[in-house]
Image (cartoon, rainbow, N blue to C red; front, side, top):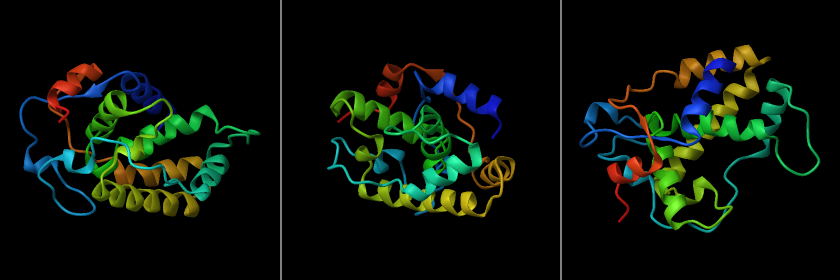
Amino acid sequence: MTIEAQNAFNSSQTESCQTHEGPLSQDRIATKVGDLADFTLYVRDDARTYKREFREHLYDAWHRLYEIPRGEKQRPWKFRQLTLIQVYKPLANSNGEVLCLLRVRRRTNGKPGTALHQFLSEEGVKVLRAHLDQLLAIASTSTNREEYEAQFEKLFGQQPPTKHKSQSRMACAKVFPIH
């Protein structure tokens, strides 16, 4: 994914979520764990206890591939963008709908600092781990950023189209009601 594409996604997704009209269609739901009737099965209402899901090896690879200098304490801001674009947006082949659900849950049921992955159900965590393993595999075998992004695009670039335009988080909450 090019810098321009990443910046366009980040600007459109940071303050918005995808919404759609009516129920999700079966042809849009294809996951690494199996076909599920609804993306809400990946998300839980309350945050689970924090457990580290992102391995240091992935961050090391991102440092190397994107030539991001290492900080002393906190992770670079670029990692937030990479996490949203390369982890949560393509997660479960949802084209950002799982990300939308996670943001709504965190906003309504989370505390400041609650990680998005804490709102994944057990099934969602399995999908996240499989996705992170795939990212780590292509990052480990890539020699540079261009090769990595080409492999990422090949593996995750064919997301099903959404039938809707970006809307606010509240519109997302109306489409994916909180139980």
